[in-house]
Image (cartoon, rainbow, N blue to C red):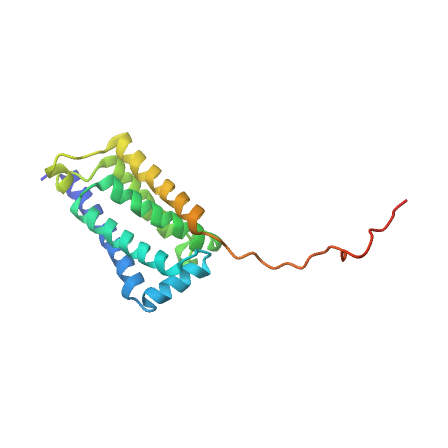
Length: 181
C-alpha cells in the first residue's frame, strides 16, 4: 500500500469524521435544532431553522462523502463553505486563536479540504474505484471556488446582521442650522 494513499485516507477520515460530529452536534447536541437555529439567527442569518437543517445536512453529507472518497472536490467545497461561514460570522470577531474562540480551527479544516481537492482522495476511495478522480488545479478550483461561491450565495441570500443602534448626533428637523456668517 502506498503511504501517500494511506495518508490521504487518514486525512479524509479525520476531516470527514469531524464534519459528521459537527453536524450531529448541531442536530442532536445541547440545544438541538432549535438551539442551533437560535444561534444562527443571533449571528444575523435569517430563517434559522432552515439554516440549522442546511448545516446539519451539509456537514454530515460532506463528512460521509469525504470518508468514502466520493465526489471529493464537491465534498471539500462543502467543508470550505461551512467553515468560511463559521469563520466570518462566529469566529472572526474573536481573533485568530481557537482558545479564544477564534478562526484558527475552522481555517485549518478549510485549508485541509482545499488540499484534498488538489491532491484528490487517493486510490483508497470510491472516486478511484469509479475512475472519477478530479484533482490538481480542477479539484482545487472546485474545492476553493465552490466553497467561496457557496458562502457568498448563502450570505447574500440570508445574512442580515442587526445594526447597532447609535444615537444620532443630528439636530431635530424643526431647527434650522446655525448660520456661521
